[in-house]
Amino acid sequence: MEYSLKMIKECAAFLHNKGIGKPLAGIVLGTGLGAFIHKIDIKITVPYNEIPNFPEATVEFHKGNLIYGLLNNVPVIAMQGRFHYYEGYTMQQVTFPVRVMKELGVQYLLLSNAAGGMNAAYKKGDLVLLTDHINEQPENPLRGLNDAAFGNRFVDMSSPYNKDLNNKILIAAKKLSIPVKEGIYVAVAGPNLETRAEYRHLRNMGADMVGMSTVPEVIVANHVGLPCAAISVITDECDPDNLQPVDIAEIIAVAGKADAKLSELFAEVIGGF
Ligand code: HPA
Image (cartoon, rainbow, N blue to C red; front, top):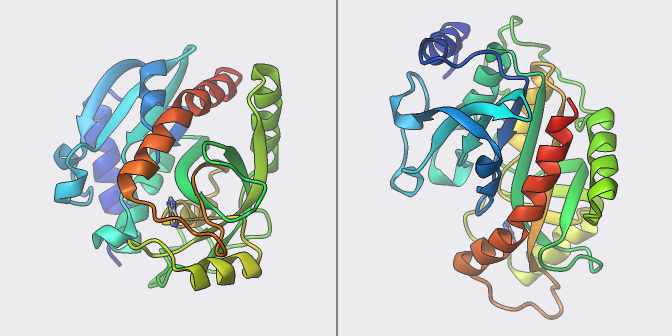
């Protein structure tokens, strides 16, 4: 096992010593989705590479920071950048920060990601609230010895996204007049984008959008009993019958354009906690 209660407690103790208190909400920000940080009255920024037992940063990942502060007086902890499986981390490493958040006392976890839209009704820049997911990644963060101190061996996934949180998000979206769709996310390993045949296959499986993250963190959040919700920003339209080439720079640019409304929405929801 590449994580243990001891490692998590060491990590939490280090963060407490840095002055991080008891955050109520944890936020994981997806690719190109960093604007939320500016909503926070930041008290403490800790680079990932200073945190004991955190995965070692890859070159791509040198900007990762854990950020603690207040949002409308609600203490929050945000991950500016997440660990992806395609970078070479194990699933235990990818999800380690979720376990640390739980240890710090986080009660709600909000995640965002950039995703390819396969549902024909989705357009670039749309926000889609996850109602469910399909795990097509080749590894599982719960594989290996199960320490009962964390949770069940066979985690129930009948309702992986917390219904109350999802309702809060939909109500906040309505209040702010931000359109939010709902859909099913499929997680793939990446890092390549999909072929036309793969998009067709994933769509036929019942997925509305596809991405390379979120599902491992959600599995672990369910393992430790941390209510979570997630929003995808649709960064490319994946119509297998009319597929246009897409590159990561474009994905990041589209995410950047939707970033403000996503941040507003998360801030509204957290302000109501
Ligand atoms: N596929 C997988 N991951 C993605 C995509 C996609 O089309 N767009 C953004 N992340």
